[in-house]
Each structure stands twice: as structure tokens, then as C-alpha cells.
Length: 488
Ligand SMILES: [Zn+2]
Image (cartoon, rainbow, N blue to C red; front, top):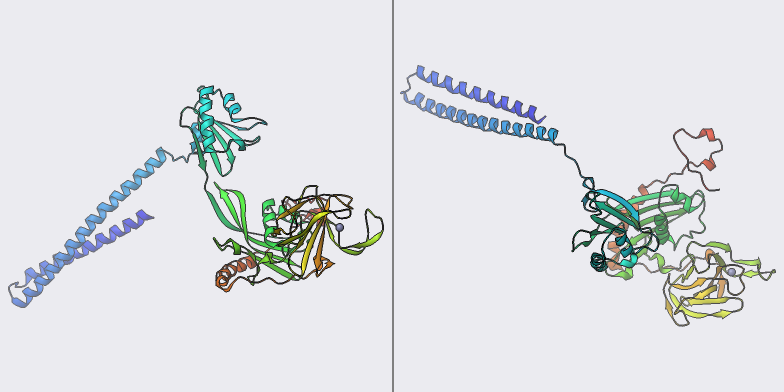
């Protein structure tokens, strides 16, 4: 293409030159025919001749330079073609800073109970050198982190000489290179992390877990979504056809997804209600960093929906429940969250501990006063957390105890009680108090973030997955669409 273009230009310039030359020649011939010494004609002829000469010279020069330039360029082009054909460029297969094609490598993992000295001894490293390597290694990374299952890579330039390098990967973010043939030889390398903003969306058909996993989203993203929305959404009780949309940060190392950063914006629709949660980072002022609704009100100013993560409600608030231990009907003023023994129980809101003790019915329990209106109470703890005693201030999400079955309880659970003006109420049915929005000085900054991400959320369109469980006629499945089978 370039060459064709160059030729065309060259020919054009040649034509211009020829035309100018002819014009110059003709004009000279014409002047010979007339009496050149006659003043008006001479003046005219001089001007014409000079002009003609000038144009001719300029065009000739341009043509020579251009021709020279094109020729050189074409030669270069031809040369590089030859080079490429003779010496094909190979992109080296690089890992841990080594061109792997020049080395033999063996992948291993650390065995149970294997220490760095065991590993080095197995590679035939003498005791003096081993001492030096272990000393250096200790200055570069935490040796206690070398646990069973973590990757080790042995690299050798040639198999007869033995192992030249030992690579240990404490995590995807970094690796340690032991140069076994040199003294200054243990180095840590940190891999750069790049972060991309990505989106996710789905519809709840069965469980949240299935909705996420069936769409290829990670457990980590599920947890981060809960973090963004837990103040508005009770993730233990999602409704079929609930819909979520997320804008979040995904971290990559060497092109591979390694971790989910923050969910930046979330939208959750249940029945006719749409909830939004926008992450606002106020830099050094950590106080204002967190999740806000569209009006700039902090999501966490209210209460967490549950005092235990990933628990199941085993019994609801009820005014007429058959007590599992006492075997007669009486009101149940709390909500029971069943979870394994020892699961952390957290304060659902900021407040002050008003009670932390033991009674025969409640077992070990903690009561927190949040403000003049609200208190919460957590019963049947295996153990009250260290430092939790009356008068101590606690913050939302702080661990106050651990799930147990002390007092009147059949199995491990926390009986969670919500008090409003001294009365126990059903917290799952409550309209919680409004929170104060961000100060005016920060609203502009917040609004800019909100108005950038909310349209992105609106642009995501979750699709229902066509599940085998909902397909009554198996033959109706289109060919080539392998369907994931839900757990029954
Ligand atoms: Zn209970």
C-alpha cells in the first residue's frame, strides 16, 4: 500500500517536472524567434525565463530527493522482510523473571511439616551454604508462612549440574528466588496488581449461592456484595426473582483474576423495592468512607440485618411458639440464628454494652444499648468475647461473643432480641430510623461518584439462566448448551 502510494507520487512528480521542462524549453525557443533586445519583450522574456528556470530547478531537486528517499525506504523495507524471514521473532515464555525455554523446571509443593532447611537439604545444599541461605531468606520474607501445599519451583540450566534456582511462591502477589550458586542469593519479587472495573448481575432462582456460582462469580464477590448491601438486604431470606446488579473492582496479576476489590455500586431489587449502595472513599478521612444510599445517607447508620454471617434462621419471632425445651407454647420474642459452635456473633449497631452475664434461661448473653430507643440482646453464647462488659462501647460489626447453646437451648444458635422502647419487637418487620446524610461539603463529591455509577448499573441486564430443573421436557434443551444441574 505504502509502496503503491510512493510510486504514484513519484510518477506525478516526474510528470510535473517534464511539463515544467517543456514549458521552459519552449519559452526559450520562442524567445529566440523574436528580437530579444526589444525592451518590453525582453523584460517579459526575462521574467518568464527566470520563473521557468526556477520552477524547473525546484521540481528537479524535489524529484531527486523524493526518489532517493523512497528508494532508501524501500530498501529498508525489503531488508527487514529478509530479516524477519530468516530470524523469526520468538516471544520468550517468561516466568519468575526467567526465560523458561532455556531451563528445565519441576513443580512441587511444600510437604506437611517440611521446613526450609528440609527443602534445601533435599536439594543437596551443604550445611554452611544452607545457613547462609536461611539467614538471607529470613530477612526477605516470613519463613513461618512456608506452609504445606504452597508452590515450589525447581529450575535447572542442565540436569547434570543440579538445581540452579529455587522459586517459592508465598502468594500470587509475590515470589522468592533462591539462587543456589551465588552468595547474595535470596530475592523477593512483587508482581504488579492491576485493577479493572467490572460488572455482574443475576436473578435469584434458588439460593444466592447458586445464582452466583451458576454465573461463574466467585465466593469472594458474593461476600463483597453482602458487605455492600447487608444493611438493607437480609441475605438469609432472599426471594425468588430478586435481582442484583454490581459494579466492582477486579484485581489481576499477570492477566489472571486474583481478588475482588470493593463493590463500588450495587443495586438490589426485591418485590417492588429497589435498593442502592454506593461506595464512597473519603481518602484519609476514614470516618466517611463506606457505603451510602442514593441520598448520601450511610447504609450502616442503622443496624445489620443479622448478628451472625452465613447463618440460617431456625426460629422466628412468634407470639405463640411451642418451646423446643420446655415443650409448651409461649411467645418467642427473638429470632434464632443457627450456626456452628464458636461462630462469631457481632454487634448489629454502634452502642454501649448494658449487660454481659449469665442466667439459667439466657445462658451467656450480651445486651447493647444503641440509643434512647433501641437495644439488642444476644443469647446462648458459648463464650462472651474478651473485654465485653457493661459500660464498654462497641461498634457495628464488632465481635461480642461466640455461638453456643448455654441456657435453655437444644443446639448451637444465637437468639437475637431487638428492643424498642423497652419492648421486644420483631426486627425483621421493623422500619429503622433514618440516618443523617453526608455533610454538604462532601455531597458534591459523592454525587459525582453516584451519577457516574448509577447509569452503569442501569445498563446491566441480568438474564435468567435456563435451568435443567425448570425444564420439564429434556429434549427441549437446545443442542450444545450444557446445563448445570442444580443441587436438589
Ligand atoms: Zn430464641
